[in-house]
Image (cartoon, rainbow, N blue to C red; front, side):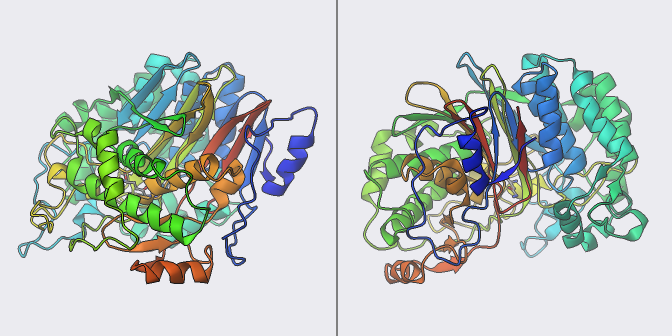
Length: 575
Ligand code: DON
């Protein structure tokens, strides 16, 4: 495994043994970036000549590479990483959550697997509001927050259809890490510490992550025997080891213990679904991403479709660029709220939303000043509990997977005896069904809770193909609603601003999601005079809380470059 600071990349690039050269020379992004920006040059960069895995956790990346070396393909490695993340990165990696996997085979064929969670059969539109119609926190913490998990069905199905090694072979590393324990690093220790009061509320969660009643320190070993047993059941019985039999009974018993509503029928009925990818074009590049029930691909397409009409874009970090980007994002997110939901339940006018005519009309509606706000607050919350990993194998197969429990440690409920956390994905539905939009629509009408329905997501795993039709980039991130704008900015930094991947990931980011009407900026990243200019255009500029963990692989001449976001603790490995 090679992990370098960005400066060390130079050494890698000059080494004759392994000399991947970026396809486009990286321009200096420094103009427009404030000297106070801490991340410049700090992205963790890995190089490889053949195959690579980049994830939010270096242990998981190494396991993925081991699987590739054993003859596994990118799907095998991605499935192995998915199970390992459930062990070594419990705040976000999971078997109790869900996700989206975008796969591009070396042949050019592209598949998307949707293993988003579903609302339980007994869910109702008003289950999270109190007698006064006010939202409660039951959609976030506790048993009622949990939707029917999709991850195990997804990982098993991806392997069944496209894997090469035996399932036993690819799930074994996760079992070993659960049974024998793994060494907790500063990031995992810190995240458990940060949420320890919430975790301690649920005895099985406290037993798993606060052994002996205290936070595991960096360097200590964390053993998860119950989780190991659950993974063994999955090893032996596939998805049935989770959705039927002993594990299913433990989930339902946990529901009964805490007032949750997931039933044996809900579990037995869960299916991962293969979907057509959203296919986008941007300045000659083709981008494949997740379709509804993720809003990721469509919103990314709207942002890029609007901005492609400004050619060239204003310089990086200039007020003119940030204004245009904020206005494009505002429009894309407005459609996210009103136009998208689970396609099994509501219509998603994807073709119209991505049509050149519609893009043109949105572009024309952008003026020199900030667009006046609409007076609603859908209240989507960015949180830190998602993780993305990217894999490229020696045959050019590529996989981008984003998976989540929603909030950090999901609902904070661990299934007693089964050792895994349940998601709080129900909070991704519009949980306040009676709050009207200014336009008269009801908040999240298309994203209202209904039994069996998948809640709208922002996850945006993306695979980019260059102008010659070759694999170019695999990218994705954590960050709640900010995932979409993060992925957009990394792509635009590379394609429009000619940055190398490390600089593109490290560069400061902004975010606008229409509601609230705020132009968020990463503090310390942009020049004060830039922010003053944006304020003078009518934008309400505010600092963003830390978020984001881009994990990307770029194909370059002579090999692959992997970059892990300096904002987080991931890392890559390859050979
Ligand atoms: O699917 C979604 O859009 C959210 N549940 C993702 C949450 C998230 O990214 C939180 N973390 N960073």
